[in-house]
Length: 316
Length: 280
Ligand SMILES: Nc1ncnc2c1ncn2[C@@H]1O[C@H](COP(=O)(O)OP(=O)(O)OP(=O)(O)O)[C@@H](O)[C@H]1O
Ligand SMILES: [Mg+2]
View 1 (cartoon, chains in turn cyan, purple):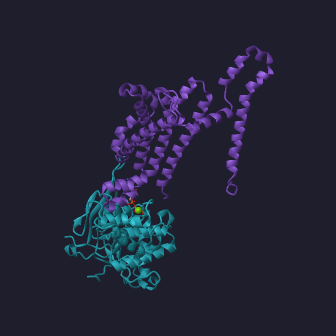
View 2 (cartoon, chains in turn blue, cyan):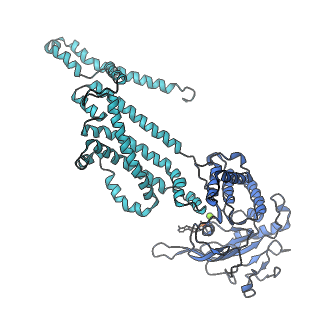
View 3 (cartoon, chains in turn orange, yellow):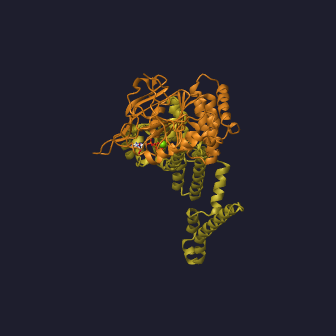
């Protein structure tokens, strides 16, 4: 049954309501999958439950309903298989840069000697360009450098999957761009599987293979899955030259501005949360905003309706 | 402002000291002056004036002379009621350090448990609320009755008064460790023991050290009173004994030493506190 590397099935989160009130359902019926080596971004308005989903994937939070299966095993708690880059970098301020990375490495390979741990950690810090700042304390680093240490710490334990919660949200545009490039090249080199939350449409298009669009809460759901069909060897400086870029961008912005609220409450006619429609706006030609295709799942193939009349079976 | 003239503050301190000593000098001289102003009164009491002068407030000169005596020969021992001030201070410091050390051994681990477990916190809170405001000296009779040893009773009183600030600060520090840091440890599958020692302890260390500093300050306040009660040895007993001897110069010397040692204790804990402080 499980066909994806990471399989999220029927995830829901409810908070008990105040006395006499109904429970608050942040989201329910969340289904999606991520393949090995795939970079998935999730976009949605503030408060729709993105962080909650990420925390469930990390094993830090528990869902009210549903299961998450990674690599054939159900996720039931935090694990070294999943590296997390926290929004607030979450470095231990009393430890140097190197010791912060070593902290995780030592836990991952308890049998290693101090030398091995140090060499391994240094390598990952050099990878993010911090070879000169090994012995600095976090308070002596800039915001961008701190976030790099957080990324090095997560990469250094060589997790099966990397989870990032708006890792660059607090950075200025220039720094953000540099670190995006770094992350891109590391991910391309290591074929790391990544799940990342972002508010930045351009960031998502640059980095992601597919973008999960989440509708507004409460009762948020995965509204659509946008495949980024541009070639993988994108760079920040050339991506704008690809005509696909603007089609994808328009589609994402259109969703966030005009359509994200339509999914609240019961359900949009024809929308099946178990198989959110997969769209490839980048391939669409002319005036068409998006092409909608069915999620290619053999088990249910052909028996689901797509939300839009303009169905194309280009992918099948 | 004072940045380019670093000598200004110490100079001002010296001026204040000089003014204080000067006033003190004048204040202790006037009693002699009055005698001169009223010769009839002087004639009346005659010799009594001379002996009365001894028990009157000593001037700065007398006190400095006394201080010099103590400093040059702090460790003499001529029987129970006549020991050097160094020996007396040593007894007091030893009691404070033992009582404080024992309290730290109890308060830090217990505070850790309270800080980590809201259940334990709720269960112990009523006891802490009731026990905390009790004057440590109120325990003295009970301690003397049960322990039957004045020295250990004094240590017990120090133990009790040092306990609360450390306990409360440790619990608070542990409970307010940032969730993010704990989550980092969890996602890295760091064992609970390693998390306690390598995340929670360093994170809470500054708060714990603040509690220790408060505790040692209170302990040093309490030891003087406790030793006045139990007698025998210690700077508190020394002060009381000199009051019985009506030796004000000795009492003033002792007061100065008490202040000095208190300052040293406070400074050393402040230094330790700075060593474990981190900048976020
Ligand atoms: N303890 C709680 N009790 C009740 N509601 C909660 C609780 N924690 C979170 N929520 C609600 O869950 C919803 C989702 O929160 P979450 O942090 O996952 O949002 P998000 O999509 O990450 O938002 P942002 O983009 O602003 O980070 C929010 O609407 C929030 O109000
Ligand atoms: Mg969030």
